[in-house]
Image (cartoon, rainbow, N blue to C red):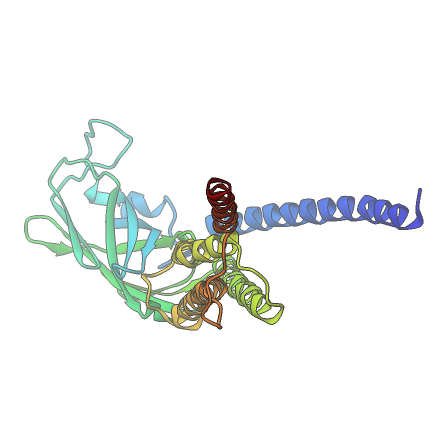
Length: 328
């Protein structure tokens, strides 16, 4: 076996297991990190105060567990899910079931911009709602938001304020939240939080942006080499560059939780990349036109044209010979 071929074989034998090992190690690392992150999400919760089941025996109290489920940056809202637990005189002494609490008196609960109304003896089922989100997503993926709302409630026909206990939890996918609870008074509690992108979203967004720039730069290098080395423009070059041009908006939208086109990242990446690719397409067409129409203004004969001209010349010779014979 030649020495060069042997080196290539050894290099391939070393490179393939090394690349596979790196991929497996990377996937295992991502899986372990995701498991640890998910466990942290489940354990992350804040309270407005200490609460045990003993409080429900002798205290009139409404306990609310609020979980953040989804962040909608376009609608500037965070969706929440609320579960309720009644204590003391608020509990119906003769419930029809035990899966959900039943109120012994009418209860109104205001969480942020919405109010949940429960009639007497009505099941207090899990409720879905939303709260306002403030921030500017034009700095994606380094944007940050803030959320804040108050919680209060009343019970009875005379609308007496209810003492509250609030537990806030939940980390929506793709975001990091830092909940803080402030007890304004026992019957009114405020929840605030800072909302930022998690490291996976930030890393993936920058990776996609860098990939877009790399593809655009290679397309520019290809277009430049066609001019520098005076090479013919192949149809595949034009098709590939046009495909990249129209694929870039889709690649950009593949970024996780990406806002509509027009943010700062688009000004730094998408706009310039599409301009470069459009310039490459124009360069290919100009090069192709120059190849078809030479600078001296003469038209190159194709093979078919050359064949037609040769046939015409042969026919002219045959006609002249025929005329000479007839004349003689």
